[in-house]
Image 1 (cartoon, each protein chain N blue to C red):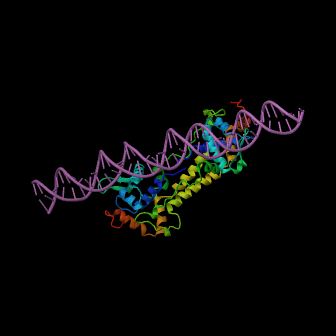
Image 2: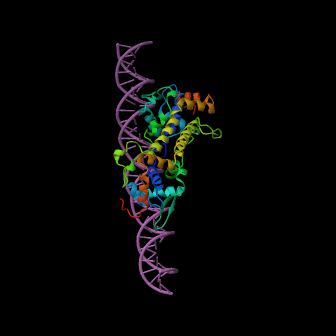
Length: 163
Length: 163
DNA sequence: GACTCACTACTCGGATACCTTCTGTCCGAGTTACTAAGG
DNA sequence: CCTTAGTAACTCGGACAGAAGGTATCCGAGTAGTGAGTC
């Protein structure tokens, strides 16, 4: 049970992108977070493929949040980067071995699969209840309302004068 | 996000062990489920290390559930096999880069880490709410009350006459 | 001065190696039941 | 017949290869801004 490390990067990127008013290149996001530009680019591509961000090509290109930050949930980001497959995959071993249940009788998932699926659903529901806008609000509470606009201005500026 | 496949095996083993009245060797459990004996032995060792099952050595040795099946939760088994580490590991990237928050101000986890931790807690709570005894009850509901005792008798019998 | 066109620089996107982790396997240490000999 | 020592077989436990997925990187396709040239 291990979540891809790119999930954390992608979430941070979504939060700071709410403060930007222009497309932000992946390289600049990598510089802001001090992480590998190439690998962060990969995560941004995953977000783009999922439709959470819109990619703009060309010299002044970059990434922009597709919709309202309140409409993007943490679950969306996690699933975009890490995949939407459930963590537990039932291999139906109840059908195997000397006491195997015949496949015709396996109309519903076995109790173990049901339990794991319920836990998975609880996990997803918890992530679905938090939006990027909620995260922005929490950041403003802890770091003050001036922090994010400052980062946004730095993201918009072409040169890294504020380094 | 991928759960070790051994979790499924370990859970099935715990369920059937409730029907056995003698120590059951790992090889017999593997035969029952038609899976790799060596690899299942590895999972059983993890359960033993966690104290969920008691290992008995010698000729008539094997594994026995340590306590009451109602006291062993699915979460215990999952954590024994897959590890107790949370799925999301915060790397504190908020402290890095040009706008990095100074470590002295990071007294509490960042909002992203809090969100992921809450989801993790929900997942664990869901798994903790189900015990092995509950799974046994569900199996009896779907497969009838005769199925598990039959498997238990087969597990207790030394020779595989019922194969 | 305004328009057109080619160029350059910068962007995203996917294809390519490296490494950690999971999967699967093997052999050794230890314990118990069985066997056979002796009293 | 009972006791006892020895043997043998079977168990768990941890150490050892192979494979898969995540991590990190690079280069090519495409586009917008820039500058020169021309009317």
